[in-house]
Image (tube, rainbow, N blue to C red):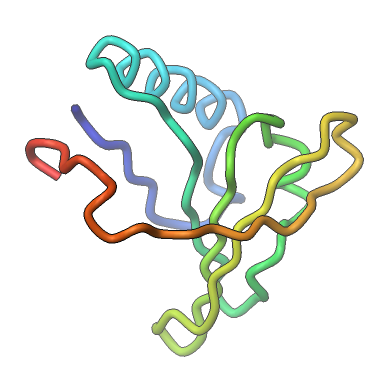
Length: 107
């Protein structure tokens, strides 16, 4: 499965390209029998909380892991879920069970 990585500022990213990239990732995952559970992104020098851009472009059924980066290093990470009415996000508690995930080839 190919990955899409965007490096730069969101002001440099066309929102239409952002939406198409998400749709293509979902299509590729389904073609390979995988599910997209969420999206991970960073907020350099800002808290690990959803931004207005996140609210405008989020889809209700995904988890959104946001990593706060300070001085070039991860400072905090939190997961969020968009409310069904799209009015905002609620924090989400994630549990990781060692050995529960199946490794993906090439990952």
